[in-house]
Amino acid sequence: MFLKRITVLENEVERIDYPFSIPSIRSLKQLDLTSNVTFFVGENGSGKSTLLEGIADRCDFNTAGGGRQNTYDVYAAESALGKYLRLSWMPKVTNGFFLRAESFYQFATHIDEIGASLHNYGGKSLHQQLHGESFISLFQNRFKGKGIYLLDEPEAALSPARQLAFMRILHDLVNEKECQFIIATHSPILLGYNGAKIYSFDNGEITEIAYEQTDHYQITKYFLNHREKFLKDLLEE
Ligand SMILES: Nc1ncnc2c1ncn2[C@@H]1O[C@H](COP(=O)(O)OP(=O)(O)OP(=O)(O)O)[C@@H](O)[C@H]1O
View 1 (cartoon, rainbow, N blue to C red):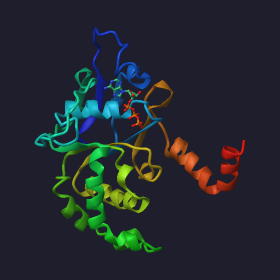
View 2 (tube, protein in one colour):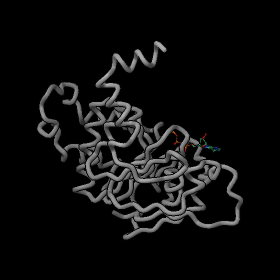
View 3 (cartoon, rainbow, N blue to C red):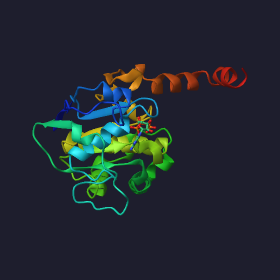
View 4 (cartoon, rainbow, N blue to C red):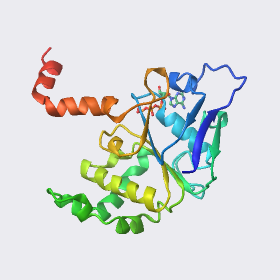
């Protein structure tokens, strides 16, 4: 782990305008990162991307998505929050990147290339089909190891099978390359990664939440187990 704590600097600016108009951001003083994989969850508009972008800004990553060396044609909006954040590292790393949803179609193509066998996934253990080493070698251009990776809704371009393939990549990078990930997500699959710390941005504050307590888990589980009743209640009232 590299990034251990995010602190919001006290400032003289009135905390009314964006980003402090977002309740979860306004109430944030300090966030401790204690796992190599941290997830940000919460309703649309609860502030996940705003904080992720602020962290990317402080890492000197391109806020349009990318690492330090990346120059993109797309307009990189200045992070409104970045200048109010202090990042505490132990040790400091400069390697890594910020990936926005817009970049994930390209990302999905990579997953397709390396996870082609997933299309035939039919009851066999993923472990047997997917070899972490080949994932890592194919991803070396994007994930260079020993760095911090900030991902905004990676599931946007990934089928459920590819989300599982991505989870395997994540697992190998965390365990073999000492990578740290902070991921904003709505995916009940990705959130299920063992050992991750999940922070909820709901109810106007950023608090730790158990996987099973997230709406993503509860709604998905209820829907899958009671689809007919769920739809009847939802659509026929
Ligand atoms: N540059 C900006 N100026 C003003 N308001 C903004 C700006 N960027 C985002 N917002 C607003 O801040 C709020 C939080 O946005 P943010 O994108 O951080 O939410 P989120 O939790 O990532 O949502 P989602 O799950 O939909 O991606 C939203 O109401 C959004 O419209």
